[in-house]
Image (spheres, one colour):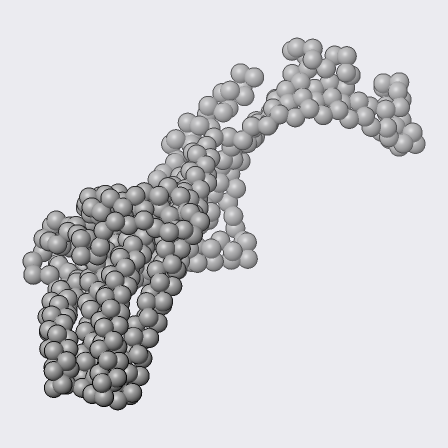
Length: 470
């Protein structure tokens, strides 16, 4: 046993002398990022994405919905389970550098032919026609990590774990943004149905006046029909909006992991507030903050380690095997110590020579995959910069659109009053009144839509910058 220990110690010392680091150095690809985002005046280092979602969304009802979503959303729960699974694999990878140890117990009885040499030898030397063999032994097998293959395998497991972690953050940003978008869409529908019901009152009053004028002979039945059609059109719109509200409530309920149900809200869209001083920050900071971009970079790091593994497979492998235990050809003296003890140690170096070009192919494929992942990483960064730029230009444009829509609503509301007064005085016909009401209704509905789009553009910008997972 002492010789075995000395042999193992000698191999370990030799291993320390010849081992070298083969982990490939990682060089971040040149991303060619702009100094600042398009449609921003200055390169401000601050970013609205640094705000936690609870500080970004101040509406307590929306906060409650998002909290439910983060806790109960099934997509997010699936992502968390994937993280837990990868974490287990990462724990296992930490033991890759340790030897495999097994224990086995075996018993064998062999009876050779009496006419064979073995049979005759047994009868001559042992005086029996069979032979017994009882064995209990520990078996050890260990591959020295000379070229860093095991370290690279551990690095692959670590990168895969971090990918699932970043993927979970990416899912959360999507869930938070989707809940906010759905909530603001619901507030818009509430506003639109309120507008439609108000317009229905105007249409009802216009119809009543037109019927009285028809009865007095001041207008024709066509005027009554047109006023009735306008009222029916508004009633149809209300029914459609009620349907859309129910569908949006169902969608929001599913997003927060609940059965379809009504969503309570106590505020109107006009009371909704989001940060107005939107700062995008620097593109470089966005790259390090966006979970999907970070995930793609981790894929690149994983492929870098895969190249190291493929390269190490082409070099000699030092493997040590050892076994030891007790062995006997009689069961009654199986565990007699030290007579039954045995042991052996084998150390060998294997150099792959010809494997039908498999190892070289694996290395080349790993390198090509790394190059593909470099391109995918650059593409993800480019897409992220584009999403931020889209959200910025949308937000600025929608500010102007909202102001113009407000002015249009004011103008058309005044037009309704003028048309009604002229109609009562006989200086305007029913078509002018109906047209004024229809235009005003459409303008108010459009204003509500523009307001919702502006809120959505702010949420899109927050998500595109990497906000929502804190």
